[in-house]
Image (tube, rainbow, N blue to C red; front, side):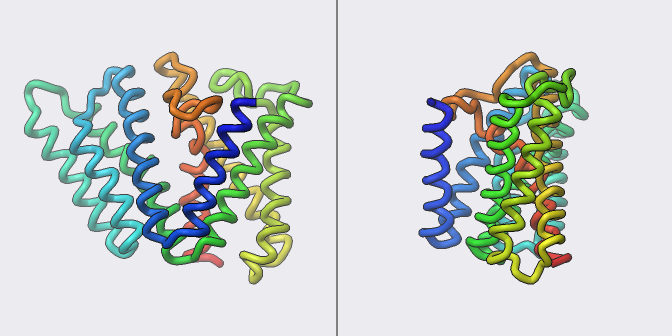
Length: 260
């Protein structure tokens, strides 16, 4: 029950921000969630023995997402600036600390977190609230169907070494749910895409979402934790809630920006 109540409350907040408030409010909300996700990521990295400089890396992550959302054409420049900044910080720490692991962890935070979160904000800025909500509803339906479908009929483990609770049957429920939502809601919000294309698009997003979920599970399993944090009752941390979005959001953005 706690899981359902917290999910419903979070859904109301997210939909309210996206649908009722101006685009900049979505960016502010995204940046706040990104900061929490980065702190969770940094804590996981620290448990793995990678102690990246948190404040400079947080600035690089938040700045990259903000620039991406406000001026997408500047993304290559801000990525180069972030890489140089991370390297410069590590240079200043030498020889007190090794360089490769902290620099690599910081640079990956930009790619793994800032780009997907920035994609969510830029979708609201450039494609409108309908496009962003279509992505979120599709992924939320897929996550929910995976969870309850897996509990109902799950028998075969999908990736037992990574996430023992995930099942093949649950994944199939998630893929079907994403395809159904994209087929139905996409008829209004992606009207130019044929029905078969919408179904395939939903399947693709669900598969990337599952891959993102499993990837985050590998990060946690490597350091022996179940949840990234306990900030969301019944769900764990922000990373636990949006792990699938981190892989699916860039794919969705690329499709809307360059293919559809």
